[in-house]
Amino acid sequence: MMVARRWQDVDWREHQRWTVVDGRAVNYVELGAGPPILFIHGLGGCWQNWLENLLEFAPDHRVVAVDLPGFGASAMPKEKISISGYGVFVDRFMEQIGMEAATLVGNSMGGFIGAECAIKFPHRVERLVLVAAAGISVESFPRHEPLLKAMYVGESVVQWATALVVGRSHELAGRPRGRQAIMWFVTPRAAQLAPELVIEQAKGAGKPGFFQALDALTGYPIRDRLDDIKAPTLLVWGEKDLLVPVKDAHIFHELVRDSRLKIYEATGHAPMLERPERFNADLHAFLGEQADDADRRERFSRERGGARDAAR
Image 1 (cartoon, rainbow, N blue to C red):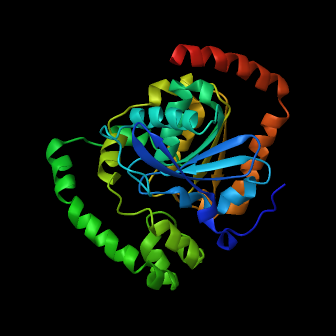
Image 2: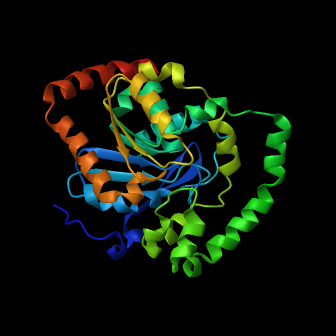
């Protein structure tokens, strides 16, 4: 059994892996052995969004955190980024790394993608964890072509500004006000986060997939399909989330049949980073339900075979 360590004490290069999906290089990290957990980051994120969680579960699980195409160190996809395309990517990525099914844990856009996988590829999803998942409020965002064109014209400016911030991340993260400046829109607790953790989060910014993914978020309704999610689902939200309002959590809870909801007070858009002890405890408890339900797992295995055949 692996012994959990602080993430700062780990040489993550030893756990970095590469694979190829649809002709494009994909970066991911992998640790541990046992029931698999796949962590999926959100818009502007990277695998490092899960630094406070991976080592907690590696002693008893195979844990994988992936850089989505167009983010982190992964290459841009061949096709234009879309939520449905990301769902297909997760299915093919899992096939490529020999992960037949897993607990999918997704934050923000990653939660949106996780929900899409649970709907389209149910044989891949034993359990689903949606952490401040996108997909509800974004349905009402306007999709005006002039606005979208302006976004793309401004992309180079945003990339330049982001590169400037990332380049100074070590300097800024060393001060509480600097950490707040880097992550104010993500969490009201940024000043209380470890400087090293904030520096790692900044590495996800300024990637080429950002604006295509932002566009994709607003053009793919999912509300009417949430009833199709059959996997047991844990919803985790921050009460002070500025990006995905907590009211969305209640809508997910109402529409996803087998769901339970946890709302963290004084917490923003990244509960797994802001409240790692509580988040990890809640995820452990959720996974424990799975271990106690052998009959459900056997039934899931039979249903997964039929769903896999249908997907093919």
